[in-house]
Image (cartoon, rainbow, N blue to C red; front, side, top):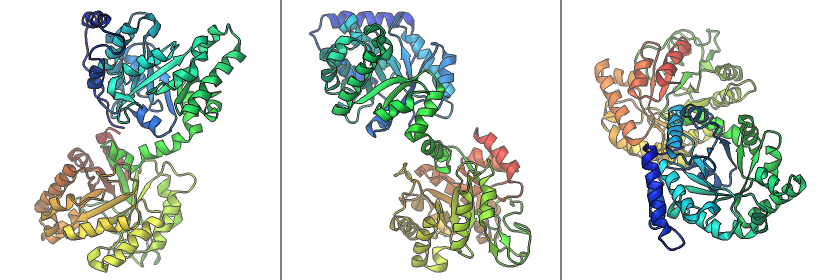
Length: 562
């Protein structure tokens, strides 16, 4: 979700004078849009609107009533990430835009690392004065609302005014617009004219209001429900989103009937509705995945997958992945290290154990020295087993292009992804030509790679530069499209530089700068002694050996604000 642009505050007196002046100007104008209304609405429409994104994709939208109009309540509402929007009513009482601005400021503070939800502002009915309705809609948009709600709409003329007041930024009249109009039909005359109102060009959402319809039909709930179904039928026929108020007991039924836009009074109803619509699991999985964290510029934490050893050595013992990470070690210095007996092996049970660790965002399976597809399948199976806490991202490092050639590497990228890897790591990328080849392997595999050019991707493609000549080409390698992560193998680089750790760190920082410049993530090994520093420097992937990882991750999460 992209952030919504904050709006400046205003004083009660200046807001009142502005409204009074605008009404006076509008009253002298011909019927239709007030002078400059379309231009002013367009100018005030800045920032993406998730309501539009969901409506345009056919997804249900869930909002919640604002509660009391205070900054503290705004902060509380913003922390409820299951709400797609907040419904704020100024239909009755003082039309207090400064209070709404203060509420929205509270939302921005409460949202923390997220963007606050868009605010849908209900204004007094158009029948109270068309010019006043235009002015109030404009005032709400200028203050930062991304939707205007018009109660008691009774005619096509009122629907046209509601659409026109949003100007060229209104959706769906403008496919690229980011403002939403919401029309409430709450009276018998509106129900009688529902077909015409719904089919007014540019209408975003139409809601039959159960509360006011109950009064209109003098408590006859059968008549109220018939009116609601009339509006729903017209919306479905016209392809317009139909909304309704709902609670946890009926929101599922309303979804099944075809309603796509909901205003609820209970946070419980949000959870029930999202789960019934199939939105909850997918969205939570994305938000808590490694990619989801990186999208919000938050560090993700992982460990090397510790092997077992066929010769009877202790899992992860000696100098392998289970040992404490040495400062500056590159990702994956472990398996096959001296002192171990027999080849490393990886099991489903080992994957299950990692899956149960709530601190881990990803695991790193290092098969650089000895590629083993059975290991990929075993760890992937274990990570997806019942009892897993969240969905851990599985990164698999395969042998380099230099070691086994392009065709073998291409085949391994495809195979690892087919076996359940979420990403593949290519070590020792030596130059721009190899970087381009590496990116092409993922394209040939049909992988939907997450990258600066494809922010909706789901697969991680990671390239490592570990040699002085490659580091010298870091800027050009970073400019190669089609991959996700650019990392410096600082341990290998240190060895290539004859043990010069200072020079290797300079190369590491140069790679980080290029990754940051181009919007790529960067990954580094870390331990409890340096993880806070690495998070502060901007590394988004922090990789540790299993031994000591818990302490390091807790420190890293605190440093990252997680």
